[in-house]
Amino acid sequence: MSKVPAAENTLRILGYLGTQRGPAPAAAIATALGLPRSTVYHLLAVLAEHGFVLHFPEAKRYGLGVAAYELSSGFSRQQPLSRLGRPIVAALVDAIGESGHVAVLHGRDVVYIVEERAPRRPRLVTDVGVRLPAHLTASGRALLATLPREQLRALYPDSGAFEDRTGSGPHSYPELRRVVTEARERGYATEDGDVTPGFASVAVSVRDHAGWPAAGIAVTFPRDAVPPGEWDALAARVREAAAELSRRIRGS
Image (cartoon, rainbow, N blue to C red; front, side, top):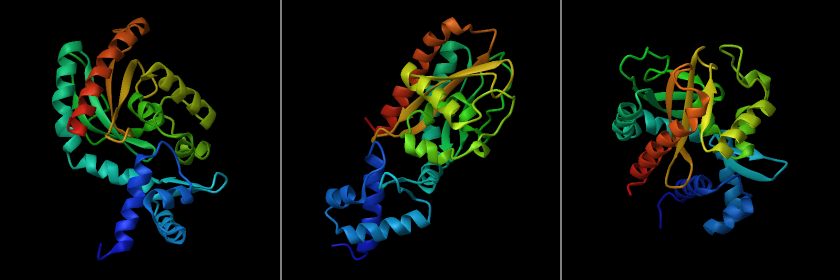
């Protein structure tokens, strides 16, 4: 038996929520973990107070909060993802001749942890450590497309959540929903001049062992260098790189 059962049960709750496809009722959490409902409710209240859990009162469910994502991105900043992803992206850039990068979700932003610039291509704004609004970037859209609707809504509660850079891109939750739904159905996300005029990107999310978004791999290119008719083929190469990084994250 653990000498600190409250700490152990708190971690078990977070671990359980991390494996679910969406928010879960407290009763389901209690049943799955074999814990008293009263204990689960008390621990969920503390987790919610500190931002690790979000409560959706209308649905009577609980999901992971922003603080949990910050832990995930903290892991990313400690370099395991960048060390695994850098050679994969470097090989992708060599193969396609366009610049590539890896980004992780941090709240409503993405943080770039790998940047590989292709020869004879201009420097981009996606240097390592740079933060950009997730809803404007291809990497961010690929990651947002993997989130349950409730968590996406919690990240973008109103119009004030939508930062603008070039005047294009989603400016409201319904617009964002359309963008991420299209990305989910297509199998990859795009952006066209929403970050830097004249440049476009395609991106694919990288899944961890539980199926959650660990990172996004994207390639960025001058808009006139790759016509839209070739984006599907380009995305297929990015998808292969994302699958390889996912495999390495899982240790398989």
